[in-house]
Structures are given as C-alpha cells and as structure tokens.
Length: 250
Image (cartoon, rainbow, N blue to C red; front, side, top):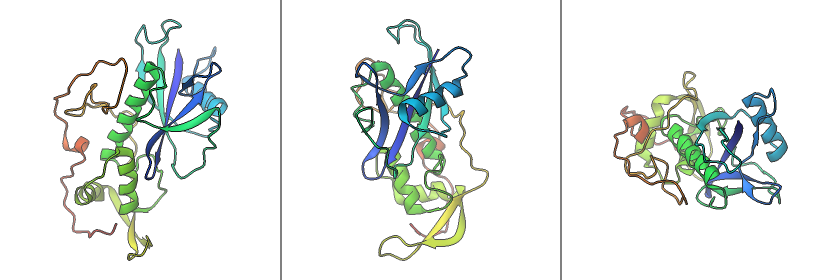
C-alpha cells in the first residue's frame, strides 16, 4: 500500500502548476511512499509532504484509489492518491530536489503519476465550477474579480464575466466592505456563505466531449482515449440558474 499526493498550485498569469520531487534515482515524481508498519494513510501523507516536499500542517483530501495490478514495476502496489492545493503567491524555494511545473508539462513523470495528476486536475476544476474558492486560497473575503481570476487560473481558460457572477453570487455573502483594485473604483468584497463547504466526497464526473473519461485533454503516453458523450448538469458546467441584480463590482 502506498500514498501519492498531487500538490497543485494556481499561479496567476502562469496557470495551474504541480509540485514535483526528485527521487534518489534522479527521476522526478509526486511526493509519495510505501506505508510503514502500523502507519495510517494520513500519517504517511504528512510524512511524505514534510520530508520530501518540506510542507507542514497540510490537510490533503483523498482523491482516488489506483489499484491496477500492473501499474507499478515493483509488483501490485495499491496507491491511495491525495490532493493538496497551495496558494500561488508564496515562495516555494524551488531547488535541485523540488520544483513547480505546469500541469500541461509533466511528461517526465511516470505514466502512473501522470494519471494521478490528470485526475487531480479534473477534481480541482470540478470543485471550482460549483464552489467559490473551495480551498480558501483567497482568505476570508475577496472581490468578484479576485475570485474570477483564481477560477480562471484553475480552469486554464477565460471565464465569461456575467455567467460567472450569476453562478457564484448565490453562494456568497456581501461583507459591506470594499477593496481598491488598480485605478478603478473600490470593488465590493464578499465571503463564502457559512453553509458552503468543500465536499471531499464529490465524484469525478465526465465532461462531455473530453478525452480519457473526462480528464482534460493533454498528452498521455499510455492511457486509452475515449470521447465522453454523457450529459452533465448545470452545476458541473458552471452555468448558473439564479439571476441577481448586483452590479459588476469586480
């Protein structure tokens, strides 16, 4: 039994990145390890992040169990993959043992770790389609522009302003305060409604028209590619049904 963690980081104007660790054999990989005797999953993940990635006091969520018998050349190794998300404004001290790379440029990883990254990216994007800043990267309050910028970085595409506002406003509470953003007038700030919480058990749903069972279509050396035609509800497409009279404010 093993654990592997995809540590993702949305970097403004540079897109979504993933943290890679250089193993003793010189290969780049996700931080992971075989479980030690009597070690629990959460303990193993915390140990790997602390010892290999120099990250402490993290709260990763379980992502998926990968149990293909031939996924590891050491034998049948079942990996419980986890997802963690970092604030892209910090300094991660990249060096010869760790680095951040765009999620579209992870071909140096093994096929098994590329698969984990693909699923992690899809889960993160799916969560952001229906929850404002689900990992609290922006802090307790933020403007709509700041929120949309974060969601665009995660999504990897520009989001339509009016549609985004209609989708997110029902999930937010105005703070009654404003923040100055550049030369424009101060923008109203919001906080997530108290009942809006990260659902760690959200299923990984397929996206119509995407390849490889809904995971976003960037290169993979071994995964079978299929076109997904199943329908996805409005909550997954990011199209909101609630109209609001609040102005742009972003």
